[in-house]
Every structure is written in structure tokens, then in C-alpha cells.
Image: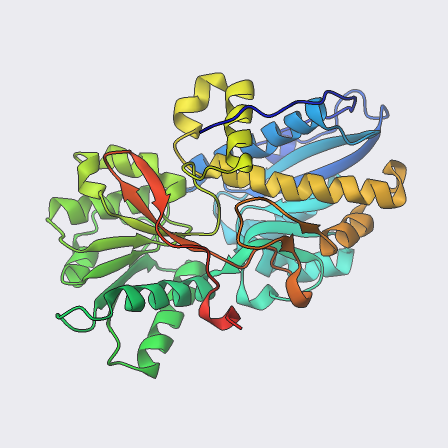
Length: 412
């Protein structure tokens, strides 16, 4: 049941400036009106993940509108400026320099790969950054922070759950397929992890791998490799996810789809529009590190309130996926960081170093998450747990079918 939250109106000057291309970046006419914190958002505004990237921007912007109206950060103006990477990793250094030149005090990076590429830049320039998922090369590194775990740990968690769920079935070990994109770091990381797990004990499961170029549109060859698999781990993006599932359903695939946290929920409306009917998707599964719309917790209720308040014409679209809500979770972390930095050093002194100190010391309870958001045991990962979700066509929604659990490498 969604509940309206009590609002406390206060005073703060908050400006949100979106620039889909660098030339639109800037500060506005009242540049000297207040102390400023500039968030530099580097994202894929025109590439294959553009729809999700834009939804995330809207979620960030709306959360800070809520802060402005209901719980202001005294004497601070917050700006969001953006840079379009077009899902091209080679644009990351140029985007970093442009956002830094525009005065970015803290970065929000759409992809963990940008964190990996730019970690030394952030450390040398002493500008912190935050993103959704981690990467093996940045775990424990200074100046870079992530909301959740990286893809290899997620792959291990997925396999642990598959094998536990399969235990005792008379047909023997499951045949697991994995479909990804050639050249994507996330695909390489998941592929390597699955192969390592299979090598450790080939009797536990069979493994079949398939990968396609980013420009793939037909998916017949890839599906032919995977059609006999009991479960297919789908590790694709946007139109690729929709195209592969459409092909598999058209060819009467009888197994189960399991999406990575990257693959399904941010693009689910696109997937549904590609298949003949939503019943074809009933029982699809997804790994997830965030809340879903069916979680009855205050944060989800607040998300609905923000969506209806600031984007009433988009409730039917933004309210069907998880990108908008995941962005509000990221904004919660950023707002808490800015607020605590201002309290510690004064609003006139908030800059990259103060923000890094505040992010490093975050310890925030959010009802419904598996653990507090904090840098656990020296880690730079704020929430290390995940769940398995199931899509139910009759409800046209996703539901958690497990409790929060740690990936195997983090189980004590």
C-alpha cells in the first residue's frame, strides 16, 4: 500500500541543469547566489542504454526537487550537469575532463566501467565518484564508491541460487546458458566467472556460452547454441535484451530466463513491447540489488509520491521499471553525503575532499534493505546484498522470491 509522506517545507536554492551534450553545460544566471555543489553525471544519453540513462536522470533530478521543497540543505545550491558517452568507453576520459572543467565536485557515473577507466583520474585530482555497481579492479579503492557489488560476484550468487533451486530434481545437473555482448566488460566478467565455476566442478552444471556483436539484430545463431539450456542467463542491454527474448519465444523456448541486474528491469517495458504477449514472459527471473515496485517499504512509497508529484504525465512509464527508483536510491546517497559534508565543514567549504570524507563515513539505515548503507569493513561498496525476483504476468510486476543474501565470496 502506498502511503503519502509528511512534508516539511524549508528554504534552499537548488538548480538542476541537464546538458545532453557538453556544449549545453553551464552554471546559470544566479551563479553567485549561493554556495554550490556540482554533480557531474556521465551517462549513455544517446547509445543503446539511452532510455534507462534518461530515466535515471529524471529520478536524480526529482529527488533533489524533493530535498529542495521538503528537507532543504541550508545555504547550498545543487546542480546536476551531464556528459553523453554514447555507450562508448573511449569517451570517458574526455567526459571526465569536461565535467571537471565545469566544476564537478562529485561524479555520478552511469557505468561501473567508467569508474574502472577513471579511477586514477579521481585519485590524482581528489574528486570522488559514485555509481551503481562495482568492478573487481576498484573494490577497496579510494575516491570511488558504488551502491552494490560487481558482476563476477553477482554471477557467483546467480549460480549458487540456480544450483540450490535445482537440487534434488530427477533430471540431474542443470544446463546453464549465458548470452552476452562481445566487447562488453560486463559480459567478459560474467563469462570468466561462469567458466571458472564450471572448471572447479564440471559435475554440478553444464555450461554453454554465446556472445553477439553490439549491432546484432537477429539472434538466431546465438539462440541455436542455447536452445537446449534449462536456464539462460541473459546479460544484454536494451534492444538486445528485447531482440533475444523475442527470438527465443518465437522459437518456443521452454526453459527459464534469468536476467542479470543490468539486463531486465531497466528495459522491461521494451521487452514486453517486443513479444507477442506478456504471458510469454511469465516466470522470468532477475538478479537485483535494488528495491522493486512491489516492496512495501517507505522508500518505495516516497518514490511513488515523487513520481506523481513531479512527473504525473509519466507515471505509467517511469512507474513500470526500476531505473527511476534506483536513481532515487543513488540520489539519497548523494544528498546524505552533501548534507553531512555541509554540517561538518560548513556550506561555504563543501568541495570534493569534504564530500569524499562524508561518503567514506556514510552509515545510513533504509528500511527494507538487507544492511545499512556504509563502507563495510573498509570496502567502498555500500550495499553488498541481492535478491532473486520473478515476473508474474497476471500482475504485470516483479516480486522478490528470496530474502536478501550475500554473494558467496562475502559470506562469513
